[in-house]
Image 1: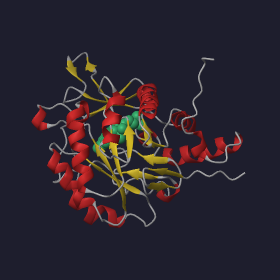
Image 2 (image 1 turned 45 degrees about the vertical axis):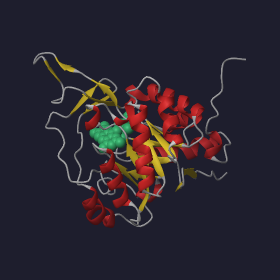
Image 3 (image 1 turned 180 degrees about the horizontal axis):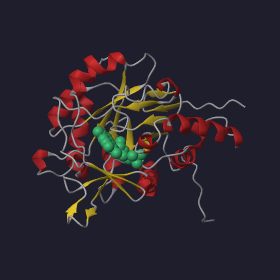
Image 4 (image 1 turned 90 degrees about the vertical axis):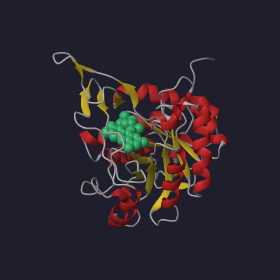
Length: 306
Ligand SMILES: Cc1cc2nc3c(=O)[nH]c(=O)nc-3n(C[C@H](O)[C@H](O)[C@H](O)COP(=O)(O)O)c2cc1C
């Protein structure tokens, strides 16, 4: 039986539902030596700002139980260098979603404008986990009014398919999903890393220079599954699930909870071919379970209740 793995993510056609996650896949070029990027759904590039930026000083990544902490922050080459130096070196046929990250709303919109009409950019993912300077450092994605303003502004700046990537550091994730759908986002990506802290006991300091960091990897997978499930019940726009995915089975659980596609982040550091292994594993699972179209699995999680 041949399995149809294709899905449509808010106007971005994907040959299979597996994408590399932003910040863990570089600009694609870093992973290209390991496998043919045309064999996965695509990837989301490292979040881009208007100008090139340095991130936090080290230590800015640390291994913790079942995951990692990072506080890389805004480090990136800037939108113009991405367009002129990185994208042209990628082979034709690779699906690239650009990610945008800024500290003010008009700057987000400007980055989106500069990405619009660029060949090879299939869509934009707006990373709403950045601190909003004007709101005293609260993340854009933590205040529904600020999030609404952000999505409205970027929607007005581009006609490219637009995904909003939600911060998990909120009380009611479904409310944030509804805000994005209401302002015209074509899809949602969730979740970003979970705000966390760990300690170097002997030195009596945080593990990371910045103190706080983002927790990623298998430790956050059940949180991500829960949030995908809640958002899928709240909105009709497609969802891309991310958080702790390391195998085809992990990815398929996200589809059952309502995700139409998935992203692999931290697991690519352990094994750079993980995205491809996940895509191939999904196909094998569908074949073994008589599923002709992977899209038919989306949102099919049952219930113990009669
Ligand atoms: C080192 C590192 C850097 C990241 N940088 C970004 C980023 O630039 N933009 C973004 O939206 N998410 C970024 N993320 C978050 C991931 O895309 C993903 O949402 C998160 O790590 C959860 O997925 P995972 O458990 O599979 O890693 C980063 C994650 C890590 C570990």
